[in-house]
Image (cartoon, rainbow, N blue to C red; front, side, top):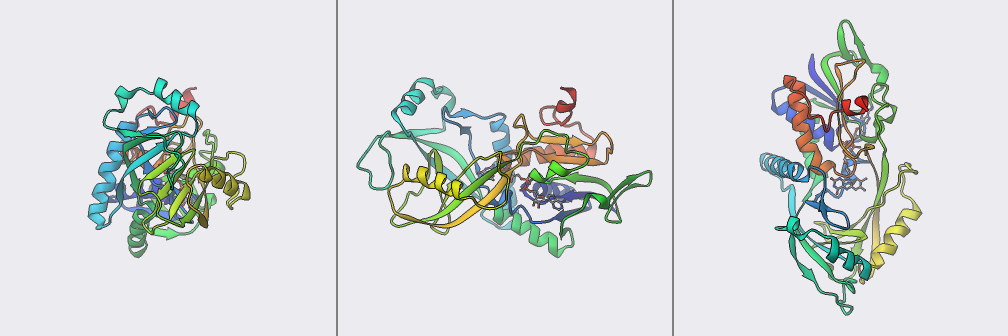
Length: 349
Ligand SMILES: Cc1cc2nc3c(=O)[nH]c(=O)nc-3n(C[C@H](O)[C@H](O)[C@H](O)COP(=O)(O)OP(=O)(O)OC[C@H]3O[C@@H](n4cnc5c(N)ncnc54)[C@H](O)[C@@H]3O)c2cc1C
């Protein structure tokens, strides 16, 4: 008898299962592709501020603090380097943006994050910084695939993780309790990411998946050591290449790279860097965004042993650890979920 079956081992299912296992629960994890079209495409970045006006995003202080503490502790436990501190160069892409920024940004709220101005310089041989920019501090990059692969390897060896697709008709809920593929379990948590759209118990939730594509490029010449943002991001990788991203597309959710996305990214990259480059990889992922851009945690009204842990959109890396902690104490001890992430907010509306 399992205490919990976790369906999906993207970042959400992996962190939740890790917390349940470490609390001593008997957990079975079932996953089809281990986050290959979601979590493993993520840049792994979490930022204190986002957007053109660099405002703090919803609950970002709470999420970032918990994310940093959790990944750092797990990195130490696994003997892995999981987190890099990132400084960022945020370059303006026209004079209007520079002026808007100077007038509208709330500098008082950015204390400890602003790390200086970047002067305009048309002669810069590497970056297109004709309008200057600002340097910020306080962002982190999680080595997402490294973290997930380490746990998945251990769980596969221990018989915790099964690599296959679970079909919904393998789940039986009845007076005898819950059974999953013929084995009894007390509870089941769906962590299916964007694939939740077909789930018979949770498909009514307002998930708005959107596709993101990134390129892996190699620069000919010495590129920047820091992450650079100017319409797209250019993120240094440990192997000396760079990641460029990302697109947002709600209409086309096909899991293959598109020529349009490649051109869109390369056009913007040419306005960011002057060095010649070659494209080495092109990846696709789907973000499981909710309509109100907040996570979706809760249980089914029809079958209260079935739970959902989803809706992390483009911020899974920062939001998942705090939400997984709330979900774990809810599952283990019945502590109510925080209303701002509880799916009952959609049922009240
Ligand atoms: C291009 C791109 C860049 C991104 N960059 C960042 C970033 O820098 N920072 C950040 O915070 N976020 C980023 N994100 C968002 C981040 O990837 C997501 O928030 C996160 O991956 C969501 O994780 P998840 O586990 O909910 O979903 P997923 O990673 O999609 O995992 C769901 C898993 O469930 C499995 N599954 C589903 N149904 C079944 C079934 N029936 N049986 C078995 N297995 C099943 C799937 O195979 C999959 O492995 C990015 C996303 C994209 C696309």
